[in-house]
Each structure stands twice: as structure tokens, then as C-alpha cells.
Length: 300
Image (cartoon, rainbow, N blue to C red; front, side, top):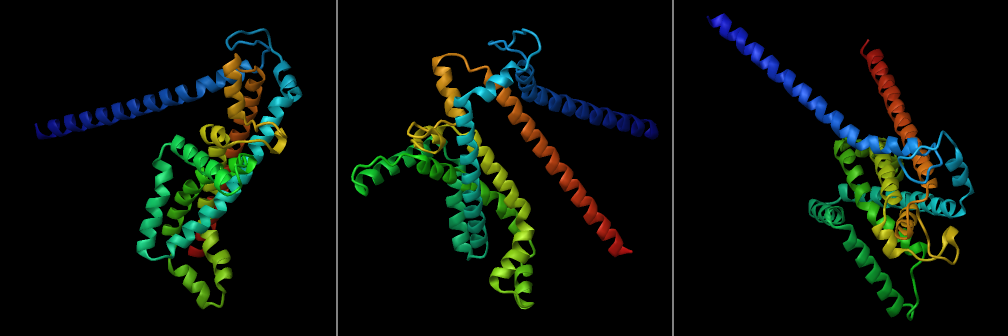
């Protein structure tokens, strides 16, 4: 009787674990379908010249040809890419230096800096955009005699402010995981503070820096609110107001449907991100395999 009860309990436990696994797998697949099916539909619609998504006029590369001929989309894409790269580079530099400086500061300053850095992350983006707008208007009136400061540089400042806290939060865990004696050991071995920073600290936190840089690019590429409030004339738009992909799509929606050429551009962006993610994953797997191989040799 005891054995029978034990066996029945084991069967129940196995059934429960199986049901949990099946439920978990189904939930994951449902989420993936909801995320990627619209993207796949958009990609499929880029290979037909129909103006409305859902119509099929036959397989064609017409939208891709029209995409490369569209000067408006080309200027918006160039503005978006340059803005994303510049803002991500500056934000990564400031966020990394801020994280390193805060990590080696006293606990009181660490607590203050961490709390101040987390405010923009949890705060609404519209608040950041409005505050920057008020700041630039005030600076233009009070300091520059009523000048209009809104330009590419105000837009760049807005994107940098938006991305710096996320870089800080990406680098901070890597600093906490690092051996605190590593920097001091480099100094004891004869390195200057600059050499110890570049040869001991930065290699250890490089994955966090890379994650912060990629996250900054993503935040800049898909930002609309800060861009709409802080942009002005300049860069590839010349004397006209700067248009990025997000503001261009919003302007087109006001007048009518989104240009069909944007479907082709979306396909290019998706493929570029996919290639980047796969490449980074392969690189990490190769690097982890090499490190395990080296550890095995040392153990022998």
C-alpha cells in the first residue's frame, strides 16, 4: 500500500511538471507569435507594390527601388543613424565614466548618484522632453538675447540625456562583479592610474559598456517624444526642421497612409538587427568555448 501511494504521488508530480512545461512552452510561443507575426507580415508585404497591406499584386522589388529613389526617406534615415551613433557614443562615455567614478566614491555619494540616475529611467519621457524644452527656451531668452537655440545640437543633448542613465545601469553590475582588488593589484605592479584603468578595469566591464552602447542606439532610433520637442534645423535637413524616421512616419500618418517604401526600409532594419544579434551570439559562444578550452588545459 505504501509503495502504491508513493508511486501514485510520483505520477501526480510528473503530470504536474509536464503540464507546467506544456503551459510554459505554449505561453512562450503565443508571445513570440504576437511579437513576430506582424513583423513577418510587414516583411512579406514589402515584396509587392500594393499600397495597402494585405493586398497582393504579385511578387515585386518595386518598393525597394522606390526606397532608394526617395530623397525624403534617405535624409530622415541619415539623420536618424548619425544622431543615434553620436548620442550613443557620448552617452556611453559619460555613463561609463560616471559609473566608474560612483563605484570608487564613498557610500554616501554612491547612494545619491544611484538615486538621481534612476529618476530619468522611471520618469515619464514627456517630462524629460518638456523640461528640456523649457531649459532651451529659458537659455535662449536669458543668455542669448531671445535666440532660437533649437537645432541638431539641442536634439543631440536630449538623446544623450535620455540614454546616459541606461548606460550607467548597464556598466554598474559589471563593476560590482569585478574583483575590487584587481585595480589595486595593477597599481602595486607598477601601473599608473590611467594604465590600471585601461588594462585592468575596462576589459572587465567591456560587456556592460557594449550593452549600454547598443541600448543607447536603440533608444535613439525609436525615440519620438524627445525628438519632437527638442529638434530644430540642421544636419542633412539643411535649413528645414530635422526629420528622423519616427517624426517622418508621424507626419505622414497625419496626411494619409504610411508610404509603402517604409515597409522595405523596415525589412532592412529588421535584417540588420537580426544579423547583429546572431553575430554577437556566435562571438560570445566562440569566446566562451575558447575560455573553457583554456581552463581545461590549465587544469591538466
